[in-house]
Image (cartoon, rainbow, N blue to C red; front, side, top):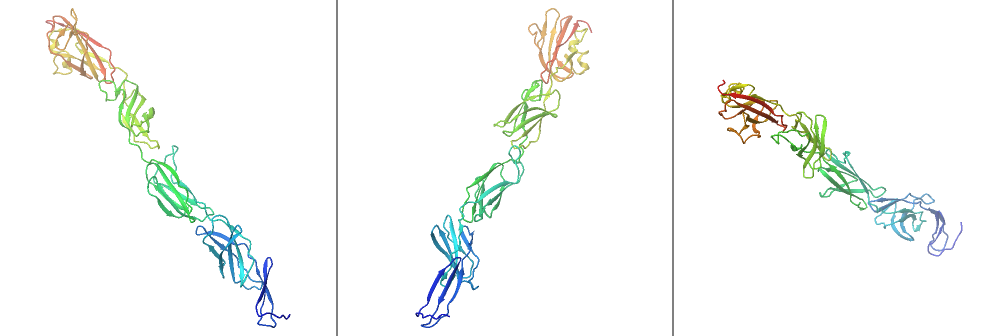
Length: 449
């Protein structure tokens, strides 16, 4: 052992060596001898740095010991920004600390071990950047749209999933539907009920633990789960004949008028055959060309809205009749009869109706309006004018109601001697088709009976 003369003080010398720090201490209590001992403080490894509580940084490291195996006194953490550094914390036994106020941008954390008054070499640094990036949210609906882009089933919900990547983590999701108020839920997932019909827009954004707020995003849903009302106000565009509303017509090239939900597609069928198609106008009305078929089966009209929802079917009676009826005169008939027979009609229309008096009668093949002309043809034509025979009334058919067996009452009148009566009949059926004229002639002879 070497003997040294020492001043009454403690002399310490520190020698920095890599990767350890060696130190020695001399202690003396006046002039005399002392014992010299030496050990070393190991250099720290690079720390681990993770983001906590949003923008804060948690720095962690592994423990080191002295060369003798004894623990060090404490640890010190520095934050470097370029060449400038700041002590973040100094701990006794803890192996981590939190930098509660890191700077924006890139920074580096380094740790050194401390033993008594001696600080070891700072180890290599770990780079850290605070979370300055907003989370990203995706939206998905529980119902898939059809080929037209519409959702036709309910209930409809939209699931919002937010991700913050390697950031601080998602704190909340905020959303609203159309112009409703905003709703905020905690966590990275939210389920949004969408109860309205039509075009619905879901607006949403996420916020992370660092306070970064996502730009508001939106997703648009087209929802229509309601079938349109059945077509209304159905009529034939060309309804011929004596009635314009009975659905009986002789116009095969026709059109159907009606009302419905604007924009809906119109389909008109006859049996299994589609005979017309079109679209309801913006005013809620439609006029669809149809090709009618010659039978009594009704047309059926169905609407399909833009979303593909179908209405109930509405029937429209539409009878196409392009064949004219036939007409026949029963009385007057052929041959010669008494003049009085015109008034009593004993041999004519009384067979159809025993209470019938003077007049004419006959049959038709189908219902319709009977038109007639009665002429007295003995010498100069004289036509029946409603009360008597007149020279000025010829050439005019007089209309009268009738269908099937028809009877047309006429006033009693004295016929000239040996007069021949000619009756001309034609029938216009319910569709407006006019039959050929049917003619009958009979001679009324004075004194014949």
